[in-house]
Length: 72
Image 1: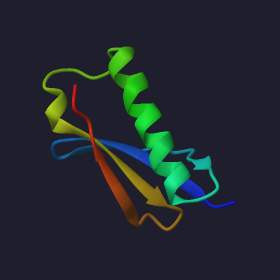
Image 2: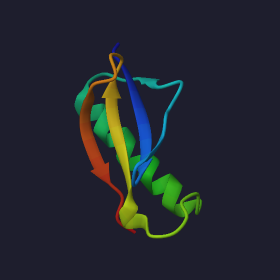
Image 3: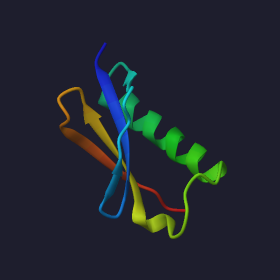
Image 4: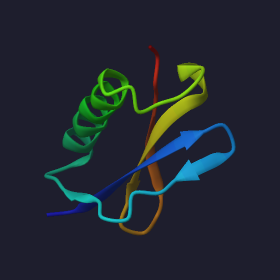
């Protein structure tokens, strides 16, 4: 199964996901990113304006496959 990484970006800062997650495909990875965003919002893990945040879904080579903006 492919490995995906979910990096959290806040403006110019990037908080890299060092572990990643093995998932079936890009669609499953995007669904995972949506749940991750919900968890971050509900857990109040994000500070300030939520519109500054996004989750970058990357493959094992570091290529950005999708960007999920976080809207609170």
